[in-house]
Length: 113
Image (cartoon, rainbow, N blue to C red):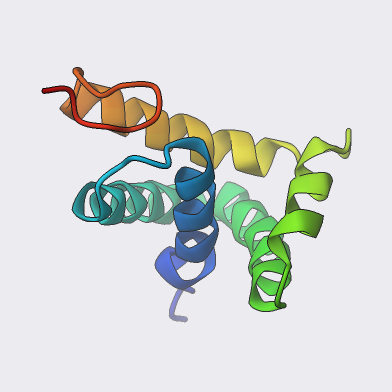
């Protein structure tokens, strides 16, 4: 049985979250970071991956609706088990990649001169 690929599910949310958290991150770098996050999710053990993709699908559906980022931000702040962990997972993978590969990056994502 073929697995569901993570980039379509995780990619749009990761892209939007990074745009919000690191607004000055160059588009090429952001694409690289989003690809890394999706690759890491693809490498998770099957049951964990299923949970991450299930929660990711919920966020993806929210982002598909015009103005869906605002309800997604509210959902991220609610103390719901597992739902709040998804943005933290994506954010931590993204931040780790950015500052591991480009340590001179500023807190807004701008490449230091």
